[in-house]
Image (cartoon, rainbow, N blue to C red; front, side):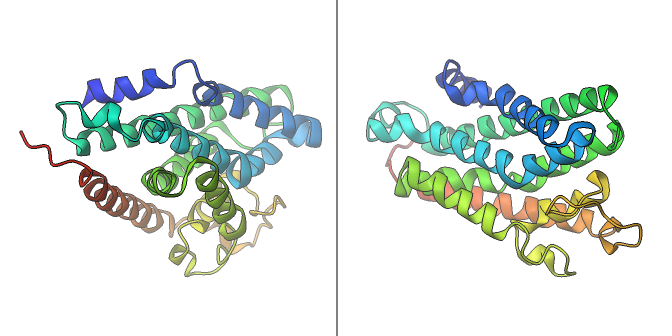
Length: 243
């Protein structure tokens, strides 16, 4: 499996997708700095999880399956490897991208904080970005699958629409976990100290409560596993290959 994941990463090594790992966090921080000055951390974190990170995920997921679609999957159907391994390898490659780019975003956010105002401590920052990573994993198999079915651009637009339109729906309610798009926006609030609309949390805001975080993360990971399993089974039906 390691070899398959490595192969998938090499396929996009010299593409815009790979550059996004570094470009997306850097562009977000610059945007936050130019728009908010000393409040760069608040602005950058808000832009990151509401628009830029979802857009980056969508591009990665659509790109990882694009070459196979262009050849009608002939380049992998001829391989003596089960398709389920290739599918999981693609998902793991994108999940690695998700982790690395959030790690770089945390480093950049912390560095900018030292030179401006440390509104979000390094500890709260790493907690918030890693929670974003964990609660967005379910989107990886979902977007790759819909990209396979409806095409590159359509999948990106559909994913962006889902994130932008649904991320704040119900996030202030106790049943926010019913909407998987709202989970990331809700559980990072205590660590970033801002509402999904970018405003600062009041001292008495119920969104400071962290009791909901563990259940929300578990729900997101279960959803990720379910979508991965279902999409793997469906993708594997492309071939009748048997060992």
